[in-house]
Image (tube, rainbow, N blue to C red; front, side):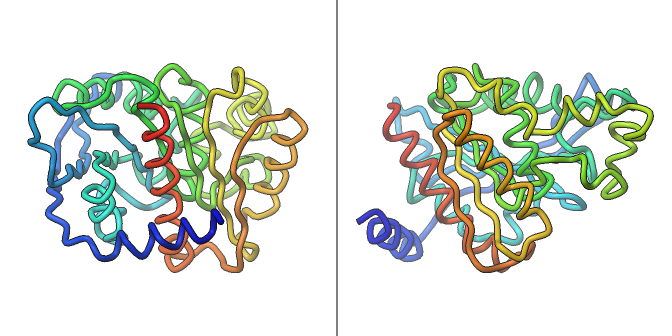
Length: 272
């Protein structure tokens, strides 16, 4: 059964004695005219001759930074070794929302991730430089960001995941600096319509984007996740959808993250 296989992998990953290396990079962003940091986790077999590695980008949530995943979730360094993948943790700003803001030209995090950071990683590390070898996931603000960027850049990312993602921005127009990024929802409703993931799902082409969504039933975003799931079913978009007891907490993400890591490992294996 699928559940037994998942448990086997999750138990196995905890037994790995990991020697993954964590690099902290400073990457200049021409579009935002500033230096940004990123963590890169390389597996213990990274120096193996003639091998290229798949890359998983992990996007932090609101008020987090590039070090959030490495500091709070040790499983990612274990996963780098166990699954033989690179993990890259960009800085999305305290509230950058991983988009190019239509009202603040200094916030261009979509351009940064897709046109500056990804090419920098591919030129600096031995990576698989195709959508089949590149995936993106995130939590909360980063969950929206991961689906947002993957839908808009399907030539770049072959798989995407959201943990507790805010998949519809409109119900939360007064929260988390969203108004600073999109303008007032009353004055600029089109910004909110066009930049909410739930309104972008019909842009997924030919079911080629592999998607996993996970949200706790007590999470503030559970309703918008359920609505996105329902819409994906109506559009016949294949995806994995998980909801379990839990809220918008580190404890929930600590449980969800290993499943997402396994999901992307399986995706990479099936496309190589």
